[in-house]
Image (cartoon, rainbow, N blue to C red; front, side, top):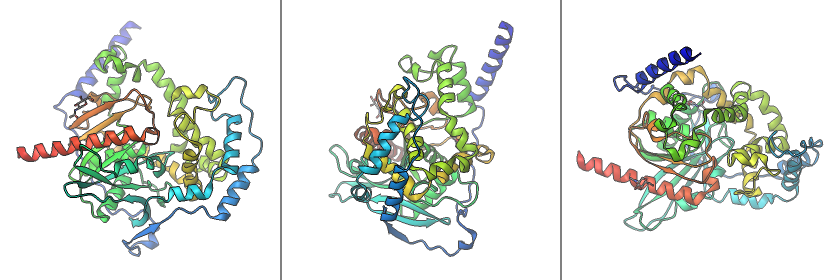
Length: 461
Ligand SMILES: *[C@@H]1O[C@H](CO)[C@@H](O)[C@H](O)[C@H]1NC(C)=O
Ligand SMILES: *[C@@H]1O[C@H](CO)[C@@H](O)[C@H](O)[C@H]1NC(C)=O
Protein backbone atom coordinates (compact mmCIF):
# COMPACT_ATOMS: atom_id res chain seq x y z
CA UNK A 1 0.00 0.00 0.00
CA UNK A 2 2.76 2.42 0.97
CA UNK A 3 4.54 1.67 -2.29
CA UNK A 4 1.43 2.33 -4.31
CA UNK A 5 0.99 5.62 -2.50
CA UNK A 6 4.61 6.61 -3.13
CA UNK A 7 4.32 5.80 -6.81
CA UNK A 8 1.08 7.77 -6.98
CA UNK A 9 2.65 10.72 -5.21
CA UNK A 10 5.68 10.70 -7.52
CA UNK A 11 3.50 10.54 -10.60
CA UNK A 12 1.29 13.28 -9.23
CA UNK A 13 4.24 15.53 -8.42
CA UNK A 14 5.64 14.90 -11.90
CA UNK A 15 2.38 15.87 -13.51
CA UNK A 16 2.17 18.87 -11.19
CA UNK A 17 5.62 20.09 -12.23
CA UNK A 18 4.69 19.58 -15.87
CA UNK A 19 1.63 21.74 -15.48
CA UNK A 20 3.37 24.39 -13.44
CA UNK A 21 6.31 24.56 -15.85
CA UNK A 22 6.46 27.88 -17.70
CA UNK A 23 7.94 26.07 -20.72
CA UNK A 24 4.47 24.75 -21.49
CA UNK A 25 2.69 27.18 -23.79
CA UNK A 26 -0.73 28.32 -22.80
CA UNK A 27 -3.21 27.60 -25.59
CA UNK A 28 -4.58 30.42 -27.73
CA UNK A 29 -8.10 31.71 -27.23
CA UNK A 30 -10.50 29.80 -29.49
CA UNK A 31 -12.08 31.72 -32.35
CA UNK A 32 -15.84 31.73 -31.99
CA UNK A 33 -18.27 32.70 -34.70
CA UNK A 34 -19.25 36.22 -33.67
CA UNK A 35 -22.46 36.06 -35.65
CA UNK A 36 -23.62 32.55 -34.83
CA UNK A 37 -27.39 32.39 -35.24
CA UNK A 38 -29.36 31.07 -32.27
CA UNK A 39 -32.88 31.98 -33.28
CA UNK A 40 -35.27 30.23 -35.67
CA UNK A 41 -33.72 29.90 -39.12
CA UNK A 42 -36.67 31.55 -40.80
CA UNK A 43 -35.88 34.77 -38.94
CA UNK A 44 -32.37 34.98 -40.32
CA UNK A 45 -31.83 38.30 -42.05
CA UNK A 46 -35.26 39.49 -40.93
CA UNK A 47 -34.51 40.85 -37.46
CA UNK A 48 -33.61 44.48 -36.94
CA UNK A 49 -31.16 46.12 -34.59
CA UNK A 50 -33.62 48.35 -32.78
CA UNK A 51 -33.54 48.68 -29.02
CA UNK A 52 -37.11 48.55 -27.69
CA UNK A 53 -38.30 49.60 -24.24
CA UNK A 54 -39.57 46.70 -22.15
CA UNK A 55 -41.57 46.36 -18.94
CA UNK A 56 -42.30 43.35 -16.78
CA UNK A 57 -46.02 42.59 -16.62
CA UNK A 58 -47.86 40.59 -14.00
CA UNK A 59 -51.16 40.55 -15.85
CA UNK A 60 -54.38 39.60 -14.12
CA UNK A 61 -54.82 36.25 -15.84
CA UNK A 62 -51.28 35.24 -14.90
CA UNK A 63 -51.72 36.29 -11.28
CA UNK A 64 -55.09 34.54 -10.97
CA UNK A 65 -53.72 31.34 -12.44
CA UNK A 66 -50.66 31.52 -10.20
CA UNK A 67 -52.76 32.07 -7.07
CA UNK A 68 -55.02 29.16 -7.88
CA UNK A 69 -52.03 26.87 -8.40
CA UNK A 70 -50.53 28.05 -5.11
CA UNK A 71 -53.78 27.43 -3.28
CA UNK A 72 -54.66 24.13 -4.91
CA UNK A 73 -51.43 22.32 -4.30
CA UNK A 74 -51.70 18.80 -2.92
CA UNK A 75 -50.62 18.48 0.72
CA UNK A 76 -46.87 18.76 1.16
CA UNK A 77 -45.07 15.81 2.68
CA UNK A 78 -44.40 16.56 6.34
CA UNK A 79 -40.70 16.74 7.16
CA UNK A 80 -39.11 14.00 9.23
CA UNK A 81 -38.83 14.61 12.97
CA UNK A 82 -36.05 16.99 13.88
CA UNK A 83 -35.27 17.82 10.26
CA UNK A 84 -34.74 21.29 8.82
CA UNK A 85 -33.48 21.52 5.23
CA UNK A 86 -31.22 18.46 5.28
CA UNK A 87 -33.56 16.52 3.00
CA UNK A 88 -34.29 19.55 0.85
CA UNK A 89 -36.87 22.29 1.32
CA UNK A 90 -38.83 21.69 4.53
CA UNK A 91 -42.50 20.87 3.87
CA UNK A 92 -43.79 22.86 6.83
CA UNK A 93 -41.81 25.94 5.86
CA UNK A 94 -42.99 25.53 2.29
CA UNK A 95 -46.58 25.84 3.48
CA UNK A 96 -45.96 29.29 4.98
CA UNK A 97 -44.08 30.55 1.92
CA UNK A 98 -46.73 29.35 -0.50
CA UNK A 99 -49.41 30.99 1.62
CA UNK A 100 -47.48 34.23 1.72
CA UNK A 101 -46.97 34.21 -2.05
CA UNK A 102 -50.67 33.62 -2.72
CA UNK A 103 -52.16 35.92 -0.06
CA UNK A 104 -49.65 38.57 0.86
CA UNK A 105 -47.06 39.12 -1.83
CA UNK A 106 -48.10 42.55 -3.17
CA UNK A 107 -48.12 41.78 -6.87
CA UNK A 108 -48.75 45.22 -8.32
CA UNK A 109 -46.38 46.94 -5.92
CA UNK A 110 -43.64 44.45 -6.76
CA UNK A 111 -44.34 44.79 -10.45
CA UNK A 112 -43.73 48.51 -10.07
CA UNK A 113 -40.59 47.81 -8.05
CA UNK A 114 -39.22 45.51 -10.76
CA UNK A 115 -39.89 48.17 -13.38
CA UNK A 116 -38.07 50.95 -11.52
CA UNK A 117 -35.09 50.85 -13.91
CA UNK A 118 -35.30 51.36 -17.67
CA UNK A 119 -35.40 47.99 -19.41
CA UNK A 120 -35.08 47.06 -23.05
CA UNK A 121 -34.97 44.22 -25.52
CA UNK A 122 -32.90 44.00 -28.65
CA UNK A 123 -32.32 41.14 -31.04
CA UNK A 124 -28.80 39.73 -31.05
CA UNK A 125 -27.97 36.75 -33.25
CA UNK A 126 -31.63 35.79 -33.52
CA UNK A 127 -32.49 36.11 -29.82
CA UNK A 128 -34.32 38.92 -28.09
CA UNK A 129 -32.01 39.87 -25.24
CA UNK A 130 -33.51 41.63 -22.24
CA UNK A 131 -31.46 44.11 -20.22
CA UNK A 132 -31.58 46.92 -17.72
CA UNK A 133 -29.63 50.05 -18.53
CA UNK A 134 -29.18 52.84 -16.02
CA UNK A 135 -27.45 55.99 -17.15
CA UNK A 136 -26.09 58.60 -14.81
CA UNK A 137 -25.91 62.37 -14.91
CA UNK A 138 -22.61 63.69 -13.64
CA UNK A 139 -20.95 67.07 -13.17
CA UNK A 140 -17.85 67.98 -15.14
CA UNK A 141 -14.73 66.15 -14.10
CA UNK A 142 -16.53 62.93 -13.31
CA UNK A 143 -16.35 60.21 -15.92
CA UNK A 144 -19.12 57.72 -16.62
CA UNK A 145 -17.76 54.24 -17.30
CA UNK A 146 -19.77 51.28 -18.62
CA UNK A 147 -20.15 48.22 -16.42
CA UNK A 148 -21.75 44.96 -17.52
CA UNK A 149 -23.27 43.07 -14.55
CA UNK A 150 -24.00 39.38 -15.00
CA UNK A 151 -26.24 37.18 -12.85
CA UNK A 152 -26.34 33.39 -12.47
CA UNK A 153 -28.65 30.43 -11.80
CA UNK A 154 -31.13 30.30 -10.07
CA UNK A 155 -30.94 34.06 -9.96
CA UNK A 156 -31.80 36.80 -12.41
CA UNK A 157 -31.27 40.52 -12.94
CA UNK A 158 -33.09 40.83 -9.60
CA UNK A 159 -29.82 39.99 -7.84
CA UNK A 160 -28.57 43.51 -8.64
CA UNK A 161 -31.55 45.73 -7.79
CA UNK A 162 -30.15 46.88 -4.45
CA UNK A 163 -26.64 47.40 -5.87
CA UNK A 164 -27.62 49.35 -9.01
CA UNK A 165 -28.45 52.64 -7.23
CA UNK A 166 -25.17 52.39 -5.30
CA UNK A 167 -23.12 51.83 -8.45
CA UNK A 168 -24.76 54.61 -10.43
CA UNK A 169 -24.39 57.22 -7.70
CA UNK A 170 -21.31 59.36 -7.50
CA UNK A 171 -19.21 58.92 -4.41
CA UNK A 172 -16.47 60.80 -2.67
CA UNK A 173 -12.93 59.84 -3.55
CA UNK A 174 -13.85 58.57 -7.02
CA UNK A 175 -13.63 60.55 -10.25
CA UNK A 176 -15.88 58.10 -12.05
CA UNK A 177 -19.26 56.50 -11.70
CA UNK A 178 -20.93 53.59 -13.50
CA UNK A 179 -23.47 53.34 -16.22
CA UNK A 180 -24.74 49.79 -15.69
CA UNK A 181 -25.98 47.32 -18.27
CA UNK A 182 -27.59 44.26 -16.69
CA UNK A 183 -28.70 41.63 -19.21
CA UNK A 184 -30.63 38.42 -18.63
CA UNK A 185 -28.61 35.39 -19.74
CA UNK A 186 -30.11 33.85 -22.92
CA UNK A 187 -32.85 31.47 -21.75
CA UNK A 188 -33.17 33.26 -18.38
CA UNK A 189 -36.02 35.57 -17.48
CA UNK A 190 -36.99 37.73 -20.42
CA UNK A 191 -34.10 36.85 -22.74
CA UNK A 192 -34.97 34.25 -25.38
CA UNK A 193 -33.36 30.84 -25.14
CA UNK A 194 -31.57 29.33 -28.13
CA UNK A 195 -33.63 27.10 -30.41
CA UNK A 196 -30.76 24.66 -31.05
CA UNK A 197 -28.01 23.13 -28.93
CA UNK A 198 -24.68 24.76 -28.21
CA UNK A 199 -25.27 28.05 -26.38
CA UNK A 200 -22.98 27.83 -23.33
CA UNK A 201 -20.98 30.41 -21.37
CA UNK A 202 -18.51 31.24 -24.20
CA UNK A 203 -21.37 31.80 -26.66
CA UNK A 204 -23.26 33.89 -24.10
CA UNK A 205 -20.09 35.99 -23.78
CA UNK A 206 -20.20 36.65 -27.54
CA UNK A 207 -23.85 37.68 -27.31
CA UNK A 208 -23.19 40.08 -24.41
CA UNK A 209 -20.18 41.56 -26.19
CA UNK A 210 -22.35 42.15 -29.27
CA UNK A 211 -25.01 43.70 -27.03
CA UNK A 212 -22.43 46.12 -25.63
CA UNK A 213 -21.30 47.01 -29.16
CA UNK A 214 -24.89 47.65 -30.15
CA UNK A 215 -25.22 50.07 -27.22
CA UNK A 216 -22.07 51.88 -28.33
CA UNK A 217 -19.58 50.40 -25.87
CA UNK A 218 -16.45 49.11 -27.57
CA UNK A 219 -14.61 48.85 -24.25
CA UNK A 220 -16.14 48.19 -20.86
CA UNK A 221 -15.79 46.74 -17.37
CA UNK A 222 -17.41 43.48 -16.38
CA UNK A 223 -18.66 41.89 -13.16
CA UNK A 224 -20.23 38.51 -12.46
CA UNK A 225 -21.10 35.78 -9.98
CA UNK A 226 -22.11 32.15 -10.61
CA UNK A 227 -22.71 31.74 -14.41
CA UNK A 228 -22.14 35.47 -14.64
CA UNK A 229 -18.62 34.90 -13.33
CA UNK A 230 -18.00 32.25 -15.98
CA UNK A 231 -19.40 34.41 -18.75
CA UNK A 232 -17.22 37.24 -17.46
CA UNK A 233 -14.20 34.97 -17.54
CA UNK A 234 -15.04 33.98 -21.12
CA UNK A 235 -15.35 37.66 -22.07
CA UNK A 236 -11.94 38.42 -20.57
CA UNK A 237 -10.52 35.42 -22.44
CA UNK A 238 -12.13 35.96 -25.84
CA UNK A 239 -11.99 39.78 -25.98
CA UNK A 240 -8.95 40.89 -23.97
CA UNK A 241 -8.69 44.15 -25.95
CA UNK A 242 -12.25 45.16 -25.19
CA UNK A 243 -12.54 44.31 -21.52
CA UNK A 244 -11.06 47.08 -19.39
CA UNK A 245 -11.28 45.16 -16.13
CA UNK A 246 -12.87 42.06 -14.68
CA UNK A 247 -14.40 41.83 -11.20
CA UNK A 248 -15.64 38.44 -10.07
CA UNK A 249 -17.28 37.20 -6.91
CA UNK A 250 -16.85 33.58 -7.98
CA UNK A 251 -13.41 33.44 -9.59
CA UNK A 252 -12.43 29.81 -10.08
CA UNK A 253 -9.77 28.52 -12.45
CA UNK A 254 -10.31 24.83 -13.08
CA UNK A 255 -7.25 23.75 -15.01
CA UNK A 256 -6.10 20.18 -14.51
CA UNK A 257 -2.97 21.60 -12.88
CA UNK A 258 -5.03 23.48 -10.32
CA UNK A 259 -7.17 20.45 -9.54
CA UNK A 260 -4.04 18.41 -9.02
CA UNK A 261 -2.54 21.08 -6.77
CA UNK A 262 -5.75 21.10 -4.77
CA UNK A 263 -5.57 17.33 -4.24
CA UNK A 264 -1.83 17.18 -3.58
CA UNK A 265 -2.18 20.08 -1.21
CA UNK A 266 -4.16 17.91 1.16
CA UNK A 267 -0.83 16.36 2.22
CA UNK A 268 0.47 19.81 3.12
CA UNK A 269 -2.19 22.52 2.79
CA UNK A 270 0.29 25.26 3.71
CA UNK A 271 1.90 24.80 0.28
CA UNK A 272 -1.35 25.75 -1.39
CA UNK A 273 -3.23 28.14 0.86
CA UNK A 274 -2.60 30.56 3.70
CA UNK A 275 -3.33 29.00 7.04
CA UNK A 276 -6.21 31.33 7.92
CA UNK A 277 -8.02 30.28 4.72
CA UNK A 278 -7.25 26.57 4.84
CA UNK A 279 -10.76 25.66 5.92
CA UNK A 280 -12.07 27.04 2.62
CA UNK A 281 -10.29 24.21 0.78
CA UNK A 282 -9.52 21.46 3.27
CA UNK A 283 -10.02 18.82 4.49
CA UNK A 284 -10.61 17.45 1.01
CA UNK A 285 -13.07 14.90 2.37
CA UNK A 286 -15.30 17.71 3.59
CA UNK A 287 -14.98 19.49 0.25
CA UNK A 288 -15.85 16.38 -1.76
CA UNK A 289 -18.74 15.36 0.43
CA UNK A 290 -20.14 18.87 0.13
CA UNK A 291 -19.92 18.56 -3.66
CA UNK A 292 -21.62 15.16 -3.58
CA UNK A 293 -24.39 16.34 -1.29
CA UNK A 294 -25.04 19.63 -3.03
CA UNK A 295 -24.27 19.17 -6.72
CA UNK A 296 -26.99 16.66 -7.62
CA UNK A 297 -29.02 19.45 -9.21
CA UNK A 298 -26.09 20.14 -11.51
CA UNK A 299 -25.87 16.58 -12.73
CA UNK A 300 -29.60 16.52 -13.35
CA UNK A 301 -29.63 19.84 -15.20
CA UNK A 302 -26.56 18.96 -17.21
CA UNK A 303 -28.14 15.73 -18.41
CA UNK A 304 -31.95 15.92 -18.35
CA UNK A 305 -32.96 19.58 -18.05
CA UNK A 306 -36.18 19.13 -19.98
CA UNK A 307 -37.40 16.39 -17.65
CA UNK A 308 -36.68 18.16 -14.39
CA UNK A 309 -37.81 21.45 -15.88
CA UNK A 310 -41.30 20.16 -16.62
CA UNK A 311 -42.61 19.94 -13.06
CA UNK A 312 -40.81 23.05 -11.88
CA UNK A 313 -42.19 25.10 -14.72
CA UNK A 314 -45.68 23.78 -13.97
CA UNK A 315 -45.87 24.20 -10.21
CA UNK A 316 -45.08 27.42 -8.37
CA UNK A 317 -44.67 25.48 -5.10
CA UNK A 318 -42.16 23.23 -6.86
CA UNK A 319 -40.37 26.25 -8.29
CA UNK A 320 -40.21 27.88 -4.87
CA UNK A 321 -38.83 24.78 -3.17
CA UNK A 322 -36.26 24.08 -5.87
CA UNK A 323 -34.94 27.62 -6.19
CA UNK A 324 -35.09 28.80 -2.59
CA UNK A 325 -33.37 25.69 -1.30
CA UNK A 326 -30.34 27.07 -3.17
CA UNK A 327 -30.77 30.52 -1.63
CA UNK A 328 -30.73 28.81 1.76
CA UNK A 329 -27.75 26.48 1.40
CA UNK A 330 -25.56 28.63 -0.83
CA UNK A 331 -25.92 31.56 1.52
CA UNK A 332 -24.89 29.58 4.61
CA UNK A 333 -24.19 25.88 4.56
CA UNK A 334 -25.26 25.60 8.18
CA UNK A 335 -28.74 26.88 7.33
CA UNK A 336 -29.51 23.33 6.23
CA UNK A 337 -30.16 22.45 9.85
CA UNK A 338 -32.72 25.23 10.35
CA UNK A 339 -36.44 24.68 10.10
CA UNK A 340 -36.83 27.85 8.03
CA UNK A 341 -33.63 27.30 6.05
CA UNK A 342 -32.35 30.66 7.35
CA UNK A 343 -33.93 32.22 4.27
CA UNK A 344 -34.75 35.44 6.04
CA UNK A 345 -31.32 35.83 7.59
CA UNK A 346 -30.38 38.42 4.95
CA UNK A 347 -33.24 38.30 2.43
CA UNK A 348 -36.89 39.27 2.64
CA UNK A 349 -39.70 37.13 1.31
CA UNK A 350 -40.48 39.78 -1.30
CA UNK A 351 -36.91 39.90 -2.59
CA UNK A 352 -36.83 36.15 -3.06
CA UNK A 353 -40.31 35.91 -4.55
CA UNK A 354 -39.47 38.73 -7.01
CA UNK A 355 -36.83 36.40 -8.41
CA UNK A 356 -39.34 33.54 -8.59
CA UNK A 357 -41.81 35.83 -10.36
CA UNK A 358 -39.22 36.49 -13.05
CA UNK A 359 -38.88 32.76 -13.72
CA UNK A 360 -42.62 32.14 -13.45
CA UNK A 361 -43.74 35.02 -15.67
CA UNK A 362 -41.20 34.27 -18.36
CA UNK A 363 -41.64 30.46 -18.10
CA UNK A 364 -37.88 30.16 -18.36
CA UNK A 365 -36.98 27.46 -15.83
CA UNK A 366 -36.33 24.74 -18.38
CA UNK A 367 -34.31 26.93 -20.73
CA UNK A 368 -32.27 28.24 -17.79
CA UNK A 369 -31.43 24.66 -16.81
CA UNK A 370 -30.31 23.77 -20.31
CA UNK A 371 -27.37 26.12 -19.84
CA UNK A 372 -25.82 23.39 -17.65
CA UNK A 373 -26.17 20.78 -20.39
CA UNK A 374 -24.62 23.12 -22.95
CA UNK A 375 -21.76 24.18 -20.75
CA UNK A 376 -20.88 20.66 -19.67
CA UNK A 377 -20.71 19.36 -23.18
CA UNK A 378 -17.57 17.95 -24.78
CA UNK A 379 -17.70 20.78 -27.29
CA UNK A 380 -17.52 23.42 -24.55
CA UNK A 381 -14.75 21.68 -22.65
CA UNK A 382 -12.77 21.33 -25.88
CA UNK A 383 -12.52 25.13 -26.01
CA UNK A 384 -10.25 24.89 -22.94
CA UNK A 385 -11.25 28.40 -21.85
CA UNK A 386 -9.80 27.89 -18.38
CA UNK A 387 -6.37 27.05 -19.79
CA UNK A 388 -6.13 30.23 -21.87
CA UNK A 389 -4.39 33.09 -20.12
CA UNK A 390 -5.78 36.60 -20.20
CA UNK A 391 -4.04 39.93 -19.54
CA UNK A 392 -7.29 41.64 -18.51
CA UNK A 393 -6.82 43.15 -15.04
CA UNK A 394 -8.81 41.05 -12.62
CA UNK A 395 -10.07 41.45 -9.08
CA UNK A 396 -11.63 38.63 -7.07
CA UNK A 397 -14.08 39.22 -4.24
CA UNK A 398 -13.97 36.08 -2.10
CA UNK A 399 -16.84 35.71 0.32
CA UNK A 400 -16.46 33.38 3.26
CA UNK A 401 -19.42 31.18 2.34
CA UNK A 402 -18.92 31.01 -1.42
CA UNK A 403 -19.12 27.41 -2.63
CA UNK A 404 -15.53 27.19 -3.85
CA UNK A 405 -12.37 29.06 -3.04
CA UNK A 406 -9.24 29.48 -5.16
CA UNK A 407 -6.11 31.08 -3.69
CA UNK A 408 -4.33 33.79 -5.73
CA UNK A 409 -1.75 31.27 -7.01
CA UNK A 410 -4.57 29.33 -8.70
CA UNK A 411 -6.14 32.45 -10.16
CA UNK A 412 -2.84 33.72 -11.56
CA UNK A 413 -2.56 30.60 -13.73
CA UNK A 414 -5.16 32.26 -15.94
CA UNK A 415 -5.43 35.89 -14.87
CA UNK A 416 -1.92 37.20 -15.50
CA UNK A 417 -2.85 40.56 -14.02
CA UNK A 418 -4.64 39.67 -10.85
CA UNK A 419 -4.68 43.12 -9.28
CA UNK A 420 -6.01 42.11 -5.90
CA UNK A 421 -8.34 39.85 -3.99
CA UNK A 422 -10.79 40.94 -1.31
CA UNK A 423 -11.02 38.14 1.22
CA UNK A 424 -14.14 38.56 3.33
CA UNK A 425 -15.22 36.90 6.53
CA UNK A 426 -18.85 37.29 5.59
CA UNK A 427 -21.19 36.77 2.65
CA UNK A 428 -22.35 33.88 0.52
CA UNK A 429 -23.03 32.96 -3.07
CA UNK A 430 -25.70 35.56 -3.88
CA UNK A 431 -23.35 38.28 -2.84
CA UNK A 432 -24.75 41.36 -4.58
CA UNK A 433 -28.19 40.61 -3.15
CA UNK A 434 -26.97 39.69 0.32
CA UNK A 435 -24.49 42.52 0.90
CA UNK A 436 -25.15 45.14 -1.78
CA UNK A 437 -23.17 47.88 -0.09
CA UNK A 438 -20.06 45.77 0.43
CA UNK A 439 -20.47 44.59 -3.15
CA UNK A 440 -20.70 48.09 -4.62
CA UNK A 441 -17.79 49.34 -2.49
CA UNK A 442 -15.61 46.53 -3.76
CA UNK A 443 -16.53 47.10 -7.41
CA UNK A 444 -15.65 50.79 -7.04
CA UNK A 445 -12.33 49.91 -5.39
CA UNK A 446 -11.51 47.39 -8.11
CA UNK A 447 -12.33 49.68 -11.01
CA UNK A 448 -10.30 52.47 -9.45
CA UNK A 449 -7.35 50.06 -9.31
CA UNK A 450 -7.99 48.99 -12.94
CA UNK A 451 -7.98 52.61 -14.05
CA UNK A 452 -4.72 53.28 -12.24
CA UNK A 453 -3.24 50.15 -13.80
CA UNK A 454 -4.18 51.32 -17.30
CA UNK A 455 -2.86 54.83 -16.62
CA UNK A 456 0.46 53.45 -15.41
CA UNK A 457 0.83 51.22 -18.46
CA UNK A 458 0.08 54.07 -20.78
CA UNK A 459 2.68 56.28 -19.15
CA UNK A 460 5.24 53.47 -19.43
CA UNK A 461 4.67 53.06 -23.17
C1 LIG B 1 -18.31 25.96 -18.35
O1 LIG B 1 -17.55 26.11 -19.53
C2 LIG B 1 -16.41 26.93 -19.41
C3 LIG B 1 -15.83 27.11 -20.77
O2 LIG B 1 -15.36 25.89 -21.30
C4 LIG B 1 -15.45 26.29 -18.42
O3 LIG B 1 -14.39 27.17 -18.20
C5 LIG B 1 -16.16 26.02 -17.09
O4 LIG B 1 -15.31 25.32 -16.23
C6 LIG B 1 -17.45 25.28 -17.28
N1 LIG B 1 -18.11 25.25 -15.98
C7 LIG B 1 -19.09 24.46 -15.67
C8 LIG B 1 -19.63 24.54 -14.30
O5 LIG B 1 -19.55 23.68 -16.48
C1 LIG C 1 -5.01 44.93 -2.06
O1 LIG C 1 -5.69 44.53 -0.89
C2 LIG C 1 -4.97 44.77 0.28
C3 LIG C 1 -5.77 44.15 1.42
O2 LIG C 1 -7.09 44.54 1.40
C4 LIG C 1 -4.75 46.26 0.46
O3 LIG C 1 -4.00 46.51 1.62
C5 LIG C 1 -4.00 46.78 -0.77
O4 LIG C 1 -3.89 48.18 -0.70
C6 LIG C 1 -4.74 46.41 -2.04
N1 LIG C 1 -3.99 46.82 -3.21
C7 LIG C 1 -4.52 47.54 -4.19
C8 LIG C 1 -3.65 47.75 -5.41
O5 LIG C 1 -5.64 48.00 -4.15
